[in-house]
Structure formats: C-alpha cells, structure tokens
Amino acid sequence: MKILAIIIPHSDRHSGDYSMLNFPIGMAYVIASVREKIKGASIVVSDFSVDHIVSEESIKDRLRSVSIDFKPDYVIYGSMITRFSYIKSLSRIIKEIFPSAKQVLGGSAAGSGYKFFLDDGIIDFLVAGEGEEAMVDILSDNWQNNPSIIGPGGRIVPEKRAIKDINSLPMPSYKDFNVKAYIDNNFLNTGWRYMPIITSRGCPFACNFCYPNFGNVVRLRSEDMVIDEIKYLNKNYGIEAVYFWDEIQFLNKEWVESFCRKLLDKKINIKWVCAGRASLLQKNDLSLLRLAKKAGCLRISIGIESGNQGILDMMNKNTKVKQIEDSIRIIRAAGIKATGTILAGYLGETRETLHDTIKFANRNLLKTAFCCLIPLPGSKIYDYCISKNLIKDEYAYLKKVSLEGGDASHIVFNLTKMDDQAYIREIGIANEKVGRIRLKSIFDYYGLGMGLIKYFDNLRRAILMRVQGRRFETM
Image (cartoon, rainbow, N blue to C red):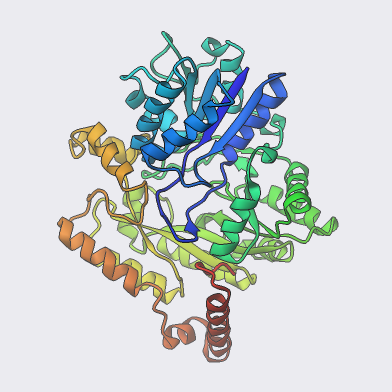
C-alpha cells in the first residue's frame, strides 16, 4: 500500500528568509500510527510548506515529479478551513495526476467544513477530529464503523470521536520530515532552536470565536512520555527549547507540578513556553509558577483578547479584566515572561473598546499585536453570522478568507459598529500604539527602583534582539 502525505502551507506569508512555518505535528502523529498499525505501508511525505509550494503550477510540477517514481494508492493531507481555496485546487490537481488514488482530507477543514467538500466528489474521505485511528480504519477498509469518517456512499454528517487514551499513540514520526528546516526557521524568527510538542488534547472552555478541534474533554499525556519526546528531539536534532502547543496549559496543576519535578530530578536542561488562561493563574499559583520557572519555563502567553469587559462577555470568555491583570502580574512575580494575544473586531467593537484594549496592554507593559476576528465554521460566532444573514454565501466567504492566506493580521470580515474604512484605520492605529510603553508606565507598574532595573533590562534585550536579527521577542 502506497501513501503520499502532502503538507499544506499554513499561510502564504513568506518573504526572503522569513516563512510562517509550523511543524505538521498532526500529520506526524498520523504517519506514526499508520506505520505502527499498517505493516508494509510505503509512505512518502511531500512537504509543500518547507518548499513554499503555493501556486497551482508549482503544485503540478511537484506532483509530476513525485509521480515519476511513486504511484500512491492514497493521498492524505489536512489543514485549517482558512486554506479552503488551496485545498480545492490541490484536490483537483491530485485527481488529474493521480486519478486512481483515493484522497483523504483531515484537520479542521474536514472537521468543521466537511460540507464544503462534498459537492464536487473529488475527495474520497473526510475525517472529523483526530486522525490517527481514523486513518488506520480507512486503510483497513473499516471506515464505515468509525462515525468520524465520511466516505463514498456513507454518512454525510460526521460525529467527532476523541481518542480516549492519547498515551496509546506512538511518538510523532519526525524521521519522515525535514525537521532541520523547521528548527532553522524557528531560530531565524525567535533565536531559539525549538520544536512544538503537545502534552494534552481538548479544551473545556467555550469561547464563541473558537472551534475546539480536539473537543471539550481534556486528555493528558503522561509526563514521562513528554519528557522522553523532549530527550529524543534534543539528542537527534539539538533543540534547546519546546513550545507546548496545547490549547491551554495549567488546566491540571498536579500534572504540571509532577512534570516540572521530573524535569528537575532528571536534570533535563530545556526551556519551554506555553499558553495559559487568566482564571487558572492567580495569586495562589505563585509557588507552582516558581517551580515552572525553575524547571525551564520562560514565557506564558495569556488569551487576553480584549481589555474591555463588555467585549469579553460577548465573547463568552468567562474572565474579568482584573483577572487578566492579576494573572500577568503573578506570572512576572515568578520570574516568567508574560505575553498575551488580542483578538479585535468582535461584535460590539468600537473605537472606544479598541482604545480600552490599547490602554490595557500599555499599562500592563505588553508588547503584542491586534489579530482580527475571522469567523470560521464550527464556531458560535460563525453560526451567528449565518443566522443573521451576515454571511450570505458561505463558499464565497471561505474563498475570500483563504485568498487572504488565512492570516488574521488581515481584516477579512467586519462585525464591528464601525464602517470598513474606520475599522481598517483603527486597527492600524491600535497596532501603532500598542507596545509604546513609556517610562512612567514602567514606574507605575514596578515602582521607581525596580522600574529603572526593568527599563534598562528591556533596553538590553531590544539591542540584543536587533543584533541577533530575531523578529520576535521571545525571552
């Protein structure tokens, strides 16, 4: 059985030596599971992301080149729905060059947008949710017993099925990828030789703008398995840091404490960063955060989204502005860098609410940027847009989203109380003003003595960042 796995570029953002590369850890898990369960499977990976294969002509050239020596029985690929137009083009080209191969689409494109790929009949299988067991079921011709799979003549609405024991999954198949290319790219952007790792799947929260690809039930990997993977990446690829790509860390604080103590006991010298949630990191978590710092945690990114309470409530964030400020302060008190994400353009957003967020970011000494809301299938805000006829033609809307490269730094859709020109103008102003931290703000936050220390330390870091050529401040 011959399988061609194609890695779709996460974004079209690419210029010079900069590329928005994200290691395809999902596909690496799927390939590892196939290799473990399907004996004799021959798998070839064609990484369109590393090679920045975007145009239809470049896709055709690559697949024709592959076809000289390899005729796949299956072609598998996955992506977010933000790559809708790319997926449509790719599926047609695969059909042209490998007409007898069965095509399998996974990722959130299939999970939340499956109906948009049913009409043309080109893609044979659509997998909603986690793909490791589903891919094995497809290759074993057992797909009809898996409710998460849409196949030929089968169900037309999938039911996402979560893998209960994610510890049963093998380590991602790194050997099938050009890991060095990803690490080199990460180093250019951040100054770190890092790779992503997951320690859990699932998120119990229900923010209206989010599509929970792994569902709401949280499943944890064992601390030892995560540590073994870190050791493997360090030994084989020389990584010095890992980015935990869990939707949220610190959900299970006992797990975090055990993980940190094991890192220290085994004397594993690794740096790590993760995402957190304000309501999970408050004053009584200081000792745990100090332990995390000792075990290598350098940065925690909080999902801030807005500095206006009304907008947070509209988003169903279930956090308070004060909680977010307290969380940032307690992370810093532990000696860990605190950063955060901001999502602009939600329902009810105005010039005034954007300015509330600018003021929030600056008084809390945050260097960040405003991402723009893109309602996506599977989210409650997308359903709202459909119900209110704000998105009149879903196909046309998804084409527009994907033609922007799936990049949230671009304004694709306007749900605010501002007209389009005002919205564009205010986002530009917001991104200019955020991060303009005055000396007075530093003194107000830290006091005079510590404020001076922090000011000169930040100056040192900025100079170092410029000298090293890093694009993003990471430490």
